[in-house]
Structure formats: C-alpha cells, structure tokens
Length: 483
Image 1 (cartoon, helix red, strand yellow):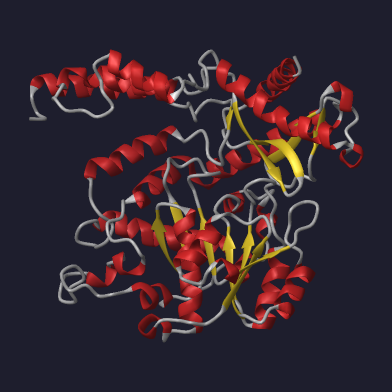
Image 2 (tube, rainbow, N blue to C red):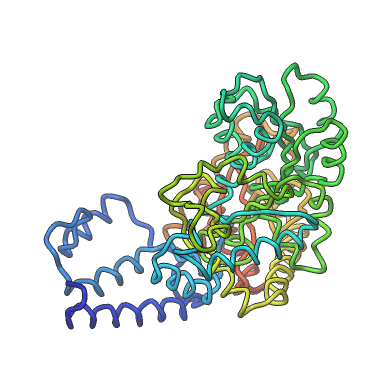
C-alpha cells in the first residue's frame, strides 16, 4: 500500500516541504502563529475535504495535508517565539528525530536497540560527569515530569525498600520550593502520598528557596522526611535554588536530595554560567531536559542517579518474555530501570546533535541567550513604560507593561480597581500578539502579584534587534488595550 509510485512521490514532496520549513525557521516575515478558533480550524479542514476524523483513504492528499498542518502550526522555531521553556530546535536534532522514528525501535533491550543502548550509556556517564557525580546510573525518558516522579520513587525505595512488596502507609514529607514545578504535586498524588505530603518552602525576592526556611519546615513537621527537591531554573522567574546550601541541610537530616534541573542544568555546558549549578554534585538524583536549553527536539530527558544499582532495584520486574537472562548481552538491557516499557531511542537524537555541535556549540547557545536576557533587562530598567517584577538570575525576565496613569508603578499604593486593571492588561496584549502573529509570550500571576509577562530566551536565532522591535510592539499593544 505504502510503496505505490503515487505515495512515494508524495513522500518525496513532503520531505522537501519539511526541509523548506526548517530553512525558513528564522524568516521574520512569517508570522509566529496564524491563530484561529477551534471552530474555524474544523471548518477549514472540512471545506478542504480533510476531516479531522479521517475515513476514506486519500493518498494523493498527503502533501496538501502536511502543508496545511505547517500553515497552522505555532512556529516554535521562530526567533520571536518565547511562550514556553523550549524553542528553536536544532535542525540537526529535527533530522535526528526523523532518524529515530525511521528505525522505529524500542530502547528497552540491547537486542532491539544495540547502538542507541551504547549511546545512552555513554551519554549518562558524560552528563553525570558534568554534574560532578563520581558514581552514577541513569535513564533517558520523555520528559522531566516522569524523571521527577521516578526520583521520588527512588527516594522511597532507598529509605524503605520493604514498601515495594508490602505497600507503604508512612506519612512522608517532600520539601520543595514554593515555586517548584507542578509535576511535584502530580508525583506525590500518583505515589499515593497525597498532596498533604508536599511542603512548599518560602522563597526570597528572586524566587530562590531559603535554606533557613527549609530548616524550620523540617523542624515543624510531624511527617517523616522523604526528599528535598531543589530547582535549577524555576518555570516562572528562572530562579536557581542555592543547591550547595540545600544539600548541606539534606545531609544533616539524612534526606534524599533531588535536583529538578530540567530547565537549567544545561548551563553546565557554559564555562561562564556553570557556577549556577554549584552543589548539584551533592545531589542523589538530578533531572535534565536537553530538549529545553540545549535545543534538542522534543522530547529528550535524562534522570541521573548517584547510586549505581538503585534504578534496577526500584523498578525491575524481570519480565521473562523480555529480559531473559540467557540472551546475548542481556546485561546491557535498560528497560527494567524505568517505569516505561516501550521507549524511543532518543539517545540517538541527543548523540547526533552533540556530535555536530559539540560542547562548544551547546555552550555558545547558552552564552548567547544569557546575553540577550542582559540586553532586555538593561532596556527595561531604563524605560518607564515597563517594570521588572523580580531580580532576574537566568534567561527569564518578568515584567509589567505599565499604563501611563500608573507610572512609576508602586504596587503598594494601587487601589483594588487599579490592581484589577493592571491584572487584565497582559491578557489583552497577548490577544493582540496572537491576532497579528507578531510574537508569542506567556503571562501569569505569582502569589498576589497581578499578571505579568515572562520573556525567556532559548532560541539562538533571536537577536537584540528582535528585542528592541518587540519592546515597541508591546508598548503599542498596551496603549491599544486602554482604548
């Protein structure tokens, strides 16, 4: 069916179309998004005879369908896309992802994935060495949420291995930053610990967990401490917790120390900024997503563990139909070290990108976006139209566009009506961004702070000229929101 001349010609056309799309990634004449309502998208596809629920085969429409998907896609490669903590996937990685899909295998066993298995083992050792682990194990997976969940399960097995067989009714406590990723809440729920097991620790003005507050939280709970989770690059403010100080607290209380470095750990490739990860080498486990700051195409995540056999001890079931002990090279099988069974050979994607770019290329990417963030901050600090929310420490800058009537902004003096008005401005500005397709940037509240924008830099194609232009665009949208 798929090897007909007609279908093969369509596939050749599609391959060319995808390469064209990659080559136009930094074309600023293209919109970041052609934003339409769900009803409009459904109606468009129906009018084209491409229903969202296909039935009858239409092989001659393959190229047309792919082209339409690309037309409606959010261009995350665009230099003016800042909406998420990923952007600007390296074209080499995109091609590598196609390669991973082409071989269409599972990384569960050596016999099904011999070369990617060896690549993964090498990558785990190399990344663990960059963290500073002298002993290590690790596994690759689809994202940081799974890595964080598995890290907490490792902590429990390390503390109470009998829970694997008998279950666990211990009232555990997991100490996290008040600005930690929401996956931590999901993790304690999935583990049966309950949301009450999660103890948020207060942060300072920069969004960093305070070690003295952690000490107080440990002393004030009647629960059994299970883990302390430090964050390297929080989602909103981009804060790096003081990992060395948190590690010292964890060691003094004999508590597992996990670092959620999904976003920020890639600074380890930069000689200039790797100090932000100081203390990570004292962790028991660390999550790291190369599909964020390193630009590897989604999804690509690592869980690194200081204890060499703990992954196997915690997760292995020894399924006899898959992990036979009398197979050739069965000692290389990695599938029993994770919750997953079927697992993409994403090591190949990371390996190929790393092969082409090297440590230097990854490091240059980090240094470039830090430079962009510095440029933005200097611009906003001297511009009365804007006010920065919190002291920045990463490639994030959080800010308000301030209406003329509220300049200079003093939150303490705002009336309830003025605060509500400020809260509503960011959504209005974003709607205009989406309507024109000029950029994409997220906004959010934080605690009792009104909505503000989060501008974070990841894409190496972004320039200071983009920043200067978008500052003026945001101001124009802001003024329009007051009409």
